[in-house]
Length: 181
Image 1: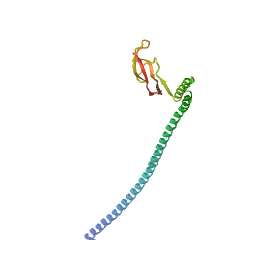
Image 2: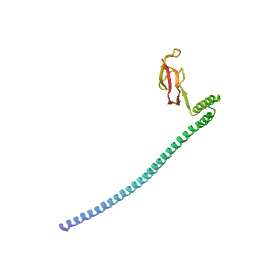
Image 3: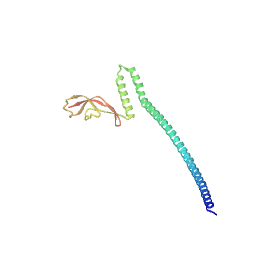
Image 4: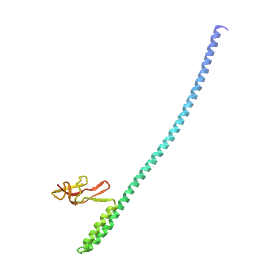
């Protein structure tokens, strides 16, 4: 073989090798694209699954929130109705007492209603405070007057003008008092 033929043969070998290399490279790229496509599909499926779970959880939370709000409203209404229901017998007794205005039983009837009212407040967990001789406490007493009284110590309640009421730690109304100096 002469040199020209050898060069041509070598060139053909090189071209053939390049074609084979390109085919292999193209096959590798196609294989890689297929793998990436499969991974993308898996990622999309995982995303769709997580998104569906998230949307379900969001809907369940919204239902829970609505149900809790409805229960709170119902609980408040029931407690309010129960508390007011405790006062209805006193209203009945006050109306009956009007029949006895001007009789000697009238004062006794009103005293019974006042006692019934105090018992109802106790049932509801409301306690009265503010009595003569108590130490003055600005957190629960409202001092509207002062007086000089030798029998009482300094900063002592001399007279209760209006009783105070509390439920637990919450003051519903401060006691209005006259304080001895």
